Image (cartoon, helix red, strand yellow):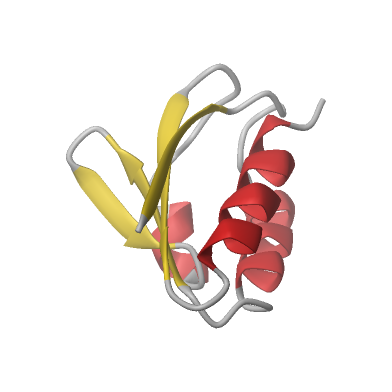
Length: 83
């Protein structure tokens, strides 16, 4: 299992960026979860991701586990921290 702290550098996660994140997460066989505070959601679930209400500057934890966990963690970190 890989766990990384990531600061969200985009404007925030609204419908379109969340849909793109879910598409990216769905490309991996590993389980991918995003944690904010005490909330933990499946990054492959659009409804779960929308429930987080993440804004730019927020810190999240990206947790991946599985066969391609390293690549999945790298992709999620790159997407969330892009400017």
